[in-house]
Image 1 (cartoon, rainbow, N blue to C red):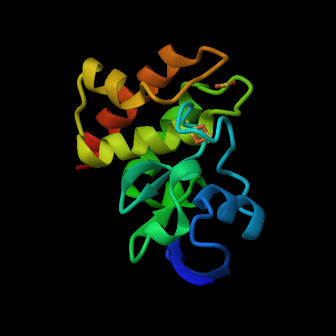
Image 2 (image 1 turned 90 degrees about the horizontal axis):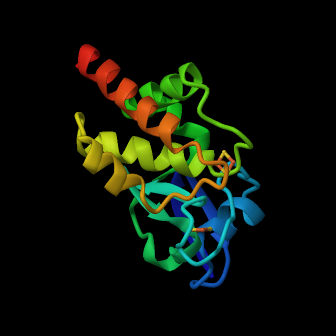
Length: 156
Ligand code: FES
Ligand code: FES
């Protein structure tokens, strides 16, 4: 079945079964491999993308549930207001270790700042709790989110 979805500001048409997860469409059909496969069961956060600015797990988001929602992936996150600050903070704080979880971490962090420009520690922990990092970069992630929040506040 044919579906037309909007990804990073561009309409894309794909011909897949309606229950195909968005993650499969991104990686296997469209070749957008920045979004990672970890567990396939909404348990790790590696596959996180945005739907209309909010974080979703693309491994459990079927293509037929997306409708007119705008999809943003890691490939375009730097072009969003919060994503620009998050990406810079990630670099400044040297957050990644192996890097595998990091596109999902960045997408969840950017979604958090879309909703709350000045999150508390508890709000950061709550928003990021579904993103697992086997390298244990959690302290740097939290520091980078705080730095991005401050930078975003300065620029309004
Ligand atoms: S691959 Fe989607 S949450 Fe793990
Ligand atoms: S940086 Fe290695 S899993 Fe997170």
